[in-house]
Length: 453
Ligand code: ASP
Image (cartoon, rainbow, N blue to C red):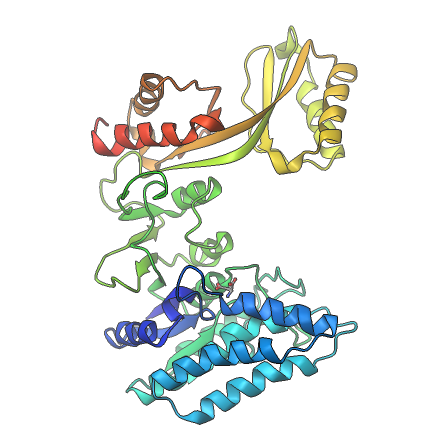
């Protein structure tokens, strides 16, 4: 039994939907189809979800919404027409889009979510109708019927663990179930969405609930690339990744999959594969609990900018009991979340995201470091990037850091800080952001092009 999720670009037009139908038809195990809202047909197009946001804004502002409604309905109408679907489905969709502009505005915490969810909800109706008309016994299932009950956190829902028993019941039967992604219902039966891009989360929840053998996530790339394709020319896609590796890469900017989508599948021990709707024969990237093959020590290299380092030194810091606690207290009182803490004997740095700080907070930190913690020197360094070299198998290989450090030094890139957690899933370097692209190129060449490791 497989759960298959299609992203917005896979569902943007009749042409794309034909590919989707063929993919579903080609494997009878593909029983649960989770769908996004129609995405962009070209780079300058608008996603239906974004059009729904504009519609919502005009509605609450009391503006005329006819044009907004028409644009959205026309997106579906074009597909209905091109696919030769019966007009009844378009009537249903049109009614549902128009009905949004009759819902109460006052004291309605879930109005925005109800607007947004309409994108996936109506697409699921359309796709179920398309499948049924083309030889696939399919049925549209609302998340309420599927049992996806979520917390009452508009725009940021989380699944309630008690939902899984009901979801499991979906496994009985032989129809193909088409389920809209991105939202669930609260205990009070309000529509509540996950955060943006959350259809991936629905797919993962359904996969865990029905105890699927595989969760297939179809997008528009051949899996997860070993490095950013905007920097590296045609990077290879990674055949196999563990959940931990995926988490490390996602942390440093790999964004193929929604962050929260890993958790339900991981807990349910369901393997996940990222595949390309436009190239379904490509094996894609499999995300599993443990490597099955002799994977390379390094699977991927990620880089992310927007980091800052708070550096301090104090003679005999190593002997001062409570220094770390006092320091972290300063950050906690200012409600600052930090990321890494590389240390020396008498010096320590806190690496954090720039967005956590304001000029006033920076001044306050420096003041407290000098006055409360009595450090000898303190400064804040901006415009830093982190580079993460990721691979679970590096723990059984010698020389990964050496290869990386050599590649960076050969290219005159100064490593400002270096840190590796005890689990040895990744090595992190902090460098100046202006050298980020160069560093990524040098490391990609060292690990994947020359195969020095
Ligand atoms: N349609 C929603 C969004 O654009 C959710 C999704 O596509 O996964 O965020």
